[in-house]
Image (cartoon, rainbow, N blue to C red; front, side, top):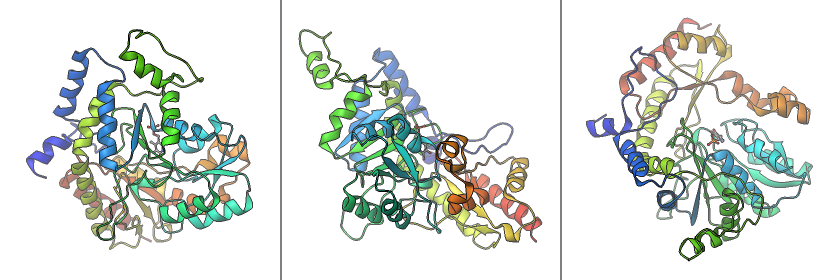
Length: 406
Ligand SMILES: *Cc1c(COP(=O)(O)O)cnc(C)c1O
């Protein structure tokens, strides 16, 4: 890592040498931008947020971007903007965080879980088709680009277009990742395939504003609705018009909206993070390559799917239970003992008490999600993780596996 990169990704050396599972990369630029906003006395949504939205559009190639205070809020707004039939079903994966499924319930809709593919962690288009065939009441699809690996979007969009149902991409992990481009064609980013794409700027995500999110869309029809519902259902046209007019105090409430706007303080951080995102991504890809190269020799490990369309928000490795005397949980404990923070992605939603009891689901209903859940370990992968620490993590994983080999 050169000095310039080092300055941008921040310093990782915690005094006790523990390697955290995730770390944000916040530098001087973010600090200064925040101070500037605070001193400007305009703290909430304003010009800086507008700029953040503009810059985000530019980066991703979308027509509109709407900043919100979380990706969960964004998923809710996007789903809300389509006025889907009450009690209908929204297809999503059980192998993810609760957000996409959760927001269906806000709107009296239901999640319809569809298992992931055999070879990766993303929803299986073949199973989506099957689910639509057996449930006539499907009104939308919410694919999730797990770990930053692009879903099979062509297949998913073909199905959705045939059925004329909207697609909302949970791109919380997937900023920025695009499809492998063939020749001169413009690259298409995750989040821009469906009717709307939703990104997260939660503290552990690929860029962060502490808490925050962004909805992107090209759909003119839903933009005004999402903007209105983001801020109490206040008609933003009236709001904007009056700002420049005499009666600055006048506004109209058109619907019972939400309080989902992003502050200029957060957006100021976002703008600086956006400038650095290519450096961040490059570093994460490099770390993934180092892991892949080291781990591919060992049959007690299964590598994450190899893909060009991957921004490596997470590095999820699987342990092969048939080759080891210890299970996944014991493997994790040994890594923690060595001072390495790890995590598990994901505890499938269908075994979570709420979804399980609400829909009468059994662990074996989604065997691929279950199998991956029971064998997966997420290793640290973030820009500030230096080569020395990567090497230490590799050596630790290899040592634990080799010592516990059957
Ligand atoms: C983090 C995450 C979210 C939620 O993001 P917030 O900004 O915290 O609301 C949604 N989906 C997935 C897959 C996530 O990992």
